[in-house]
Length: 473
Image (cartoon, rainbow, N blue to C red; front, side, top):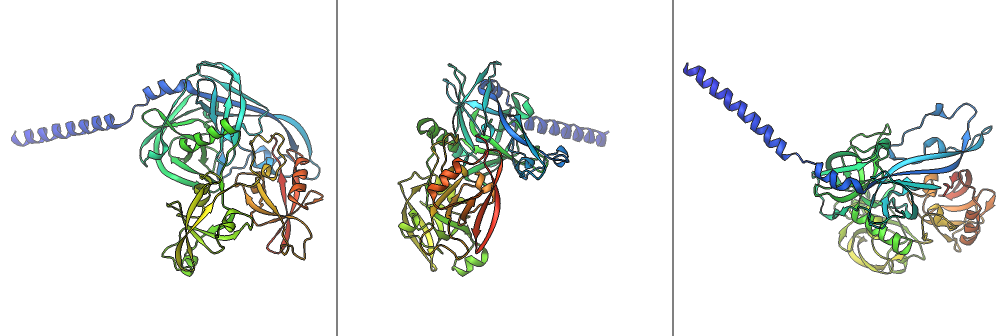
């Protein structure tokens, strides 16, 4: 009996311990019910429509299937739509619709969403939590950060409390509310997986990476902390199938609100610009420069008229810091410089000839910066996501007689999509030779929308063509 009693007591102890552990775990798991009740009324569904010219292929377009992209915007252009029209194909007009999410940032009807959600839309409709459907006006959109601001004609709307994305920690709980696949006010939760992520085509945004389930339609919706504060805008997913795979990315709310305020107040977004072409620092390059480890951004070339060349930066310099902030890799530099207002001075810590020194540069504005991203009336190279300059004496080659030099490329513009790079010489568009930046602007104003045109480039001593397709605005 004594042994049985001991066994019974041990069994009861272990059982109570398991229940106690389960109870403690249950108490530690977050409860999102209050957050959802408070926040849901200010989250909206956004639907857009636009007329586009489509191409009818003689044998069907890849069997009607979309081809997935490893970094795919929720409702971006389909791969097949980027293909040039083949011989024998013909075009027709059709209405294209897309869905996304957004949230109200002011009682008088200003709404935040992603730029790619409303890109090229002829009509934008916002459905509120109370089932009202209102037509929205595009106040402005910034493709570099993928932020857009809309305005609806309404008053006394519910709003969300904005948090501070500078205080985020990896591992903390977060939640998202949006309209995945058009299902309004769906709630998902998870944790922050990483912060300050730089994605291949989005060098201006230090993304918040989470494991929150995000799917097509969530794009533009808010990401919350446990206090119910918005800390980000859900923007992208990492996917091979087009659906959620455990990696999603949000724009920090501090970055988004800075852009939104500029769009509302000025109609445009100003960014700092150095006028440099950069490349990563490999282990071999680091050794050759006398550096302990590969870090920073190597200046491969400079715009001779740009701020960096004017203030003493040189090709071969490795930029290690911007105003004391570490440039851990080359992709970090555009974000740090872009956050500086044009006209302000920045102290650049650089490695030059094996010695560390400081170069002070007065930051310029991105050349040919658009006043709005709506594209209305814009015929500058910036509409393509380009900054160009005339060819100076000695920059011509025997193989070319004309052209303009590309000094900067917006990684999310149509020029980057076509494969145009900084340093290229843009020789012709369509059948027209390019003689100057001014003439290029005239040619851009004549470009057809939703149809590819051939562009001749000259790069590294060779000439070749790319297909440029101007998205409908």
